[in-house]
Image 1 (tube, rainbow, N blue to C red):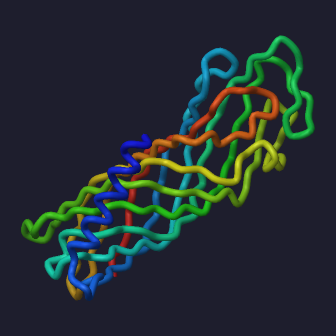
Image 2 (cartoon, helix red, strand yellow):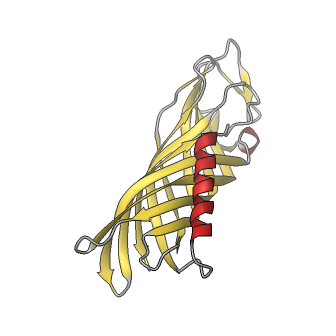
Amino acid sequence: MKKFTLLTGFLVLFLMTSAQKSWPESIRLSFSAHPSLNWMSSGLNVISRGKATAGFDFGLNADLFFDTSERYALTTGLLISNTGGELDFYSPTNFTFAGESIKPGSSIRYRLQYLEIPMAVKLKTSHFQRWTYWGQFGISSFINIGAKGDSDGVLDKNDINKEVNLFNLAMNIGAGGEFDLGSGNAMVIGLIYKNGFLDVTTDNAFDEKTTVNSLNLKVGLLF
């Protein structure tokens, strides 16, 4: 993951230094909504891999193009990301979580909300009739703005902010298309996979590293 992050950073710097002094040549804004499937992964010794849960992201995106043909861009934005997952905790005795005593083998569902700032290199094809196709790869940074948990009647959307780290970082990679609606507008659709590589939990009860991953269906309107 570190090599991927460095490679993305070097590619962005290369494109920026290769662009004309007037970069960006143009900026395209879009509003998008992302139904998502999310899951959390952790160590197998203490915490099992959990179940997938549904989520929803939405926000504003910006494509900053390096060229007048609008085929190469740095894409970023500001999104509200609702994600999380469910984990099974195994311990020989009860453990404390968010101030509550949890039984061994209990499942805890994390309901996490983040402010997400993606940063990726986006490549687009020429027009095929009214379609253009794109691919992107980069990283997303996250700031936690809300965390709630459920667990077998012990927790019912309880505040679990102390159990969740403030920051997260993930790889994002995706592909999709844009359908020209005329007058400079377009409909955007695509799939984006986000693979987290920082521990999202504070590990107050366990020492396992836990990451959040998601698969997003991106639907948007380009202005």
